[in-house]
Amino acid sequence: MATTTPLTPPDQHREPPPLLGGALWWALCAAAALGLAAWSSLGPHRVWGAAAALGYLAAALLAARGRTPRTAGAVALAGAVLLPLLWLLAVDRAQLEVRVVARSAGLLLAEGTPYLQHPVVPEDFNPYLPGMAVFGLPEAVAGPGPLTDPRLWMGAAFLGALALALPAGARSAPLRWIAACPLVALPLAVGGVDLPVAGLMCLGLALAGRGRAGAAGAALGVAAALKWTAWPAVPVALALLAAAFRSADRGEGHRPADRAAARCGLVALLTAAVLLLPAALRAPGAFRAHVVDFPLGLTDAVSSAASPLPGHLLATHVPGGRTLALLLLGVSALLLGLSLALRPPATPADAAARLALGLLLAIAFIPASRFGYLVHPLVLVVWAAARQAPDEHPLLLRVRKQVSR
Image 1 (spheres, rainbow, N blue to C red):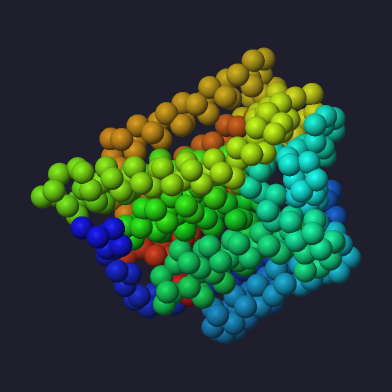
Image 2: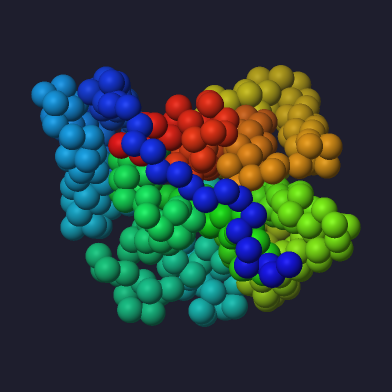
């Protein structure tokens, strides 16, 4: 069997019923943006909240007056992404992680490693894997400026990967809807290192669903070189490839499935190794301090990723809570692995839903976590719903009716 044969049924583009909750959805988004503008201590977040609230309110009014979802979504996108992004670029303000990425690129060019040798305060730490420094290279080479800002390149990578992961004839509506969603619009405007990771995970699963094992491995390997959160996507893609190939080649045994999964895994491993090992071997102590100890809360400096999620609450308020949180994190990973072995995903949408659940548990139990990480499961679920065939999974189909408008 040729490895380029699609392993999933073609997408069927039925027109969903009118979206009754459009005005309510945009009104809720406006309330969330206003809340962030009022309560956040971060300047870029307050700017985003004020601008996004105006865009969402305008979208809610348009939806309530019967304008098309496309028009309301475009207005929301302009207010929640374009307006705050252009303003923040003009005044050179961004979330801290944007400056961390830019600094890591400069260090990579100068010293061969994106990590400071002796970090002291939280701002000194770079908790991202070496591949993330790529987004800071334009600024490191050409100097600071609106066009070299890392957040532009991270946003472009996210949108490009997600577009390639969607069906060719049904890209604009899901992209517009998800970009205007507050959990995505905020990092698009202020800077979001999680966005390219989420987009590449979707692309890897999409390519695996099309039977393109090598290309899927390459996409997932690049994602795995950006952040640890991408690594669970690799076994999920392997399980998807193995199950799909076995279903398509029942008469040929497990060899085609095993070869496809092995090829994907090998390419992912080699891609990640090429991007990770040079910097990691250059300064192994700094690598461990930045990307292992700091995210797990094992350094004297405390990560700013401290949203009141179960793992952080356990680590902060319960004796031995950090160990318990890490144990729960390990149990979650084990349960995900068992689910892949006992009931592997049959379609890319199944795989995305399984991965989203695993990441949701990881976000809940990691000691240093924040609500912004929820963008990973959100993007995965919306992507799965946008490409879901209408005769599969009613729960995902409900979300699909929302994003298809």
